[in-house]
Image (cartoon, rainbow, N blue to C red; front, side, top):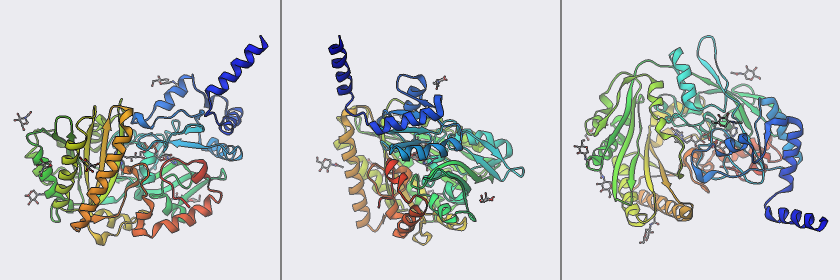
Length: 492
Ligand SMILES: Cc1cc2nc3c(=O)[nH]c(=O)nc-3n(C[C@H](O)[C@H](O)[C@H](O)COP(=O)(O)OP(=O)(O)OC[C@H]3O[C@@H](n4cnc5c(N)ncnc54)[C@H](O)[C@@H]3O)c2cc1C
Ligand SMILES: *[C@@H]1O[C@H](CO)[C@@H](O)[C@H](O)[C@H]1NC(C)=O
Ligand SMILES: *[C@@H]1O[C@H](CO)[C@@H](O)[C@H](O)[C@H]1NC(C)=O
Ligand SMILES: *[C@@H]1O[C@H](CO)[C@@H](O)[C@H](O)[C@H]1NC(C)=O
Ligand SMILES: *[C@@H]1O[C@H](CO)[C@@H](O)[C@H](O)[C@H]1NC(C)=O
Ligand SMILES: *[C@@H]1O[C@H](CO)[C@@H](O)[C@H](O)[C@H]1NC(C)=O
Ligand SMILES: *[C@@H]1O[C@H](CO)[C@@H](O)[C@H](O)[C@H]1NC(C)=O
């Protein structure tokens, strides 16, 4: 009998070779302090929390999930994880398409699910919002005050990852990155201290958090400046395979100096869809104008097969983007940037589409979406005017196109092939663009692929050294570099 149990036990241990003892110790120490806020496999809460990601391919199985109730609990947890040398990951709302960015195996997953605070100052100019919220939560809530926050264009995107990586919104031409409207961060540091980070208190870190991502601490509250809103014009416009050239041509005209891109109130969320199997294109764009004026979007509305753009409210427009919801697919973003011009738009469209038709047509369930995002010079001016940030794009270089190449596919067996193709096509595109004088180095962290290096592109190469020295000051032992290894890290 004894022998049988020994064998059984040995088999159990052998069946879980990946079990890392230190992470289990970390779970145990956290559990002894926080009881039911630490959950393990085979519980409903664990199943819920470990599945809450936009794309299936980033899902991992952590040793346990820690669901803190407030910033004090996060502040107690970090030294515990440090003392037990336990690796961990932090999830806002799970939209980053990089495996391990907000998930982990053999470690502790900290989820910010309970951080759903929404309060507004008495004059409605400052909103305090929690990192567990989605943008749609904030948009709908704040509309009653006739205010907006510079948040994501898609409803389900997380507040925190978006703001830490910069943040591309419909309002960027007027106010810059989402991060430029943050006036104070509440941060839990590597030492387990809760600090306020703003223009006058920890001002170096204030600059670093505007684009610096998950390298400095865990943000437990964002205080953001709100902006007035009234009627806006916008909505979804779609083109089918016979009208799609109209979308690409309208976008090319928009991106030309003197086109819509030069109006700070105008914005687009363009997606040119490529279906390699049928070798066809279609398009779905959201258009936006921060006033009840349809003129700037006329090239789009004139050519669209379906036009739902109308005079409406900001919250209503964002609610209409809920179609970007999570689903049963695998997905990866890839980011490149270019000088804004009609030629750039045509080059991206043509290069990627032709290659995808040739090389991806035999894979199952593949769609590619070209999000050819115009970021106007006025955007970069507004960013500096608001006090600057670590991203620090020089406005004198003019407007940019920031491409998010989104590939969605069905089978895990195709993961490597898709990753290789995406890297190759991006490299090919950058090379072509450089030859034509349309190149740009900037990589946007929130749209970047695994392995990309956004920080060396910040500030024309000047920001990274400063970011490193700030990290050294606030996280001397590199807790957020080494114990929280996921996502985009500054390196050494
Ligand atoms: C459908 C869709 C639409 C999108 N639309 C837009 C858009 O309109 N504009 C735009 O700019 N981007 C957009 N994105 C990209 C989006 O900004 C990034 O994916 C962003 O990281 C999402 O934030 P999250 O909290 O959901 O992500 P998560 O995956 O939870 O987190 C992203 C990273 O930030 C870290 N992190 C999260 N919260 C914290 C915190 N509180 N403290 C420290 N680190 C933290 C995580 O550890 C992780 O490394 C979109 C993405 C998707 C999938
Ligand atoms: C799990 O998710 C379901 C569906 O969203 C929810 O109703 C339930 O309360 C969650 N349970 C736990 C323990 O998180
Ligand atoms: C900045 O931080 C200090 C110190 O905590 C605080 O007193 C001040 O109110 C903060 N400023 C803002 C704008 O939040
Ligand atoms: C619309 O297209 C025309 C013709 O290409 C172009 O001249 C014009 O600038 C475009 N308008 C906008 C607002 O982009
Ligand atoms: C595409 O849309 C147009 C309307 O813009 C319509 O006339 C045409 O029949 C549609 N084509 C296809 C293939 O659905
Ligand atoms: C976009 O690229 C495809 C593939 O090369 C091409 O068929 C289409 O005409 C292009 N669209 C425009 C407007 O140039
Ligand atoms: C597509 O396939 C061709 C060979 O048929 C190859 O030369 C090319 O590099 C491939 N494109 C990408 C982006 O991998």
